Length: 433
Ligand SMILES: [Fe+2]
Ligand SMILES: [Fe+2]
Image (cartoon, rainbow, N blue to C red; front, top):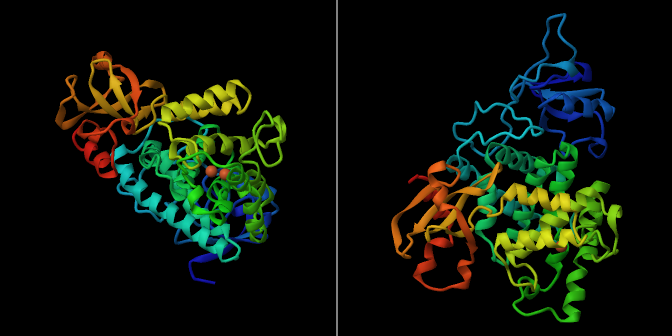
């Protein structure tokens, strides 16, 4: 054992410690990884309930046992001790960000421009992880989901600091027809939705891993079926629908937790029985599967993954809303997604009542119709020398209310150039506010 490691009894476990090993098998553990910071009393309670008696802690990454007598019992340890930073993504100047409680809606604690720098790196890590998972499965080898724990933690932390950074990146690559972009988007969206809906940390982990692996079966299908520009033939449709069964077969030897497998198996089931492969109905579809189903459908439409023409985010949300009214999806889950993204999700091009054209930069959860926008074209259609970033929630900006969402892909020419934001544009625009 290393000098900075120590075996302790569960009774000595406190918030702020960094655990590296448990005395139970990881499959019995309430957490995806045995390596984790103890962030709150719920973490300690979960380990107690799982039957953990002793643990190994790393003193170089977290706090030590308090030696003095008369210390409060571990479970009631003060929650104000800040957990150590466990993300391996460099987070500039956020070391003193207070620990946040996912149960309480709070405004972003880090400015979007700063969080975007972290999010760009995180996106590349997620997409690389998805590529590695695909390669492992294609080689017929099992995947080790414990390796995904740091990625889950980093993503959750970024979403908590300022979810608009990852939400912007998810929407930048819309209509990309790429599986990696779709999986990245589904992963970030479903974790953000889980945070908003107060899903427990354990269930969030199952959901996150399921999102990363839910399209494992697609990697075995002909590539030309992704984003096909003409309708599938009946044979192609049957093949596409087999991706769920193929995925289950591919993942069978990976020893995934039962709930993770179930969420993956049910991501195309619909509450009215119109889904596949088992035509489950209502409560037969696990609540977490219902979350993934809504996010996955939104993402597929925005990223044009199947043979359906891609649509702008506002239209995708509207179609989900109508389907929820018809009983296809849970109305509560669809309402949560709309509340999370706003009526005009980040990167949406919009026409303002003034005749100006802009791109949505940041969504206010308490003012879904009044986001922060970057105006690129004046009322006469002339491009501005530099974009004007304005917060439509400000009283002085009421004349600039949003008239409608635009689809820049529907028109050609220079006029639309700045309404299809690139990553560089997104980051540059933040600097001119
Ligand atoms: Fe799927
Ligand atoms: Fe999907």
